[in-house]
Image (tube, rainbow, N blue to C red; front, top):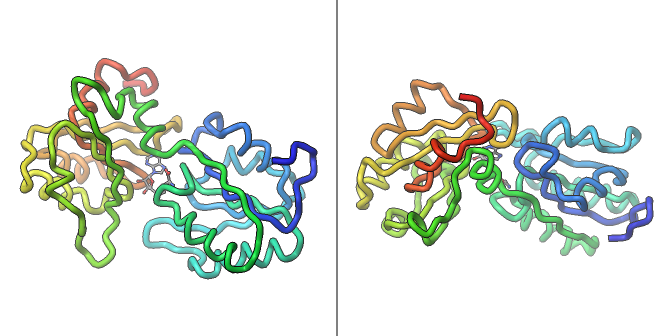
Length: 254
Ligand code: SAH
C-alpha cells in the first residue's frame, strides 16, 4: 500500500474488519479506513471501527443481517464499481475475514470484470476471535488435529453438508451462521456418529464486551439455544476443545 496520506483513487480495497473489537483490526486495515474517500460496510462491522473513517468520507451501509438484506448483492457489486469509476478510493469493509463466508470473492469478480484495480486485506475471522476471547484453542494435540469451517446457513430449509466427514472424531468444527439450524446441526452430528456428550458451544458477539459463551453438548445445545434466546451473530463450535473454556477463560466475567 501507498503510505502517503492520500490513497490512489479509482480503486477498491476489500478489507477484513475482524470480529468486533476494533483493537483487532490490522494496522493496514486501520490505515486504509482512516484514509479512504468512501467506505462501504456491512452489518457486522462495529461502530468503533466506522468511527475511524475521515469525517468527510462517504459512508454507505450495505446491510446483510440474516434474512434482512439491505442492498442486494448485485447492487453492492455495482456500487463498488460506480464509486471507483468516480475516481474515489473505496474501502469495502467486511466483518471478520473477507474471504471466509464474506462473499468477497463475488465482489472482486465484478471488479475484475469491470477493470477496477483492487487489493485484499485479511482480517481476524470470527472463529479465531471467538476462540481466543472465549479461551479455547481450535486445535490442541490432545483434542483436535483438524479444523473445519462450515456454513450452517439454510438456503432451502435443509443443511446440505458432508455430515459423515464433519462427524469424524479428533477435529473441531465451527459453524458460521448456524444458530437458526442448531437443532438440525446437532441431530446430524449425532446421527453420523459423534457421541451426544461431545462438547459443543455457542459464542455470540465474540470479542465484544457483550460476548456470551454457552457451554453444552451436542445433546443439550439445541435446548440451551432455545432457553437462552441466544441470537446471531454467533458461532457453534463442536469438539472437545471447547471444554477448555472453563480453565482458560480470561475475558468473560462469569
Ligand atoms: N467474514 C466473516 C463471516 C461472515 S458470515 C468472518 O470471517 O468472520 C457471518 C457469521 O459470522 C455470523 O452469522 C456468525 O456466525 C459469525 N460471526 C461474525 N462475527 C461474529 C462474532 N463477533 N461473534 C460470533 N460470531 C460471529
